[in-house]
Image (tube, rainbow, N blue to C red; front, top):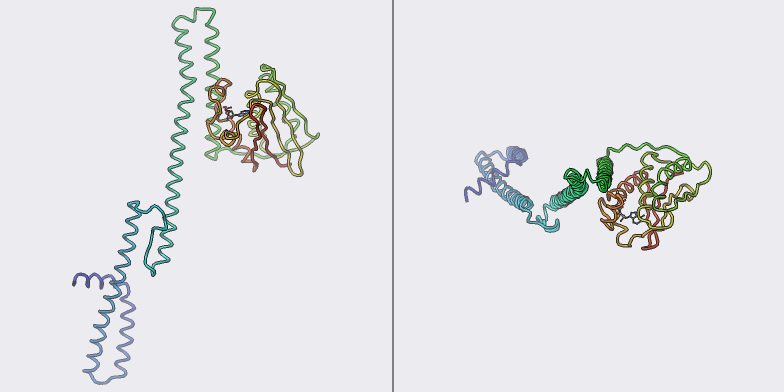
Length: 342
Ligand code: ADP
């Protein structure tokens, strides 16, 4: 009991100054009102004991509240709470309870965010290693076969070298896409926005991609925009967008055509890349912009895909304050579009 009183009094020390001031004022009054020394001494003694009782009560209350707060904090440490509504303090500590709940909620969501990031990082690393392994193993296999004697076999040596070369190209595509995506996601990609003449800009890109389409007998048609139409954007980064969208349209089209058009709107130019290809199922449309997501892995690899192209496209288009829209019908074709400011 004495120990408890001692601990209560120690705890109430924070109010000592106020008590001394209050007692001094009361003693001054006593001195002013009473003249009899015995009465004065008795009153001062009573005051002293009352103060001790009072300080003890305050200290007791303070200790109880501190215990309550300590217990909530250690429960948070031990992760005993699953939701902030489980945190409860007495009615005198409601404002503190609210603050602790807010802090708990924020810390919880920060931790969940970090866990998600960590999971994404691990998945990304696993994907990258897997993607790197495929072409490296293939190249290794072709080189070993050549070294084992195939190099002297005129019927197959060029074929193996061609294959090894193709895989080297996939590797180089993958590395370039990886560099781009990490630059974009780390915020290192500097954008430089300017007005550019859209017809003058797109024609050479299409010429560059025509040979790939010719190989597959696919027609690439560009419907020129109004003469002199200027759009606003980062020409270098947008080139990547156009190349990725048009090569995808060619890659995933077996027969027919790829059309590129610019629809002029009030304040925007709507860029459309349309194909008559294999199309994308409804449930895959929302996922094709995820890193490494491919509807058909084998098919994507066989046409030199990295699974990163559309993730890069999405980032760049969004950096232009725009949004990429996909419309597709399985077996009929797909349309990718986005808007650029005029
Ligand atoms: P990839 O390098 O595999 O082409 P992308 O990120 O460019 O990766 O595209 C992701 C996936 O979206 C592709 O693997 C493909 O399944 C699908 N896809 C993209 N463009 C088209 C298209 N024009 N037609 C049909 N499917 C497409």
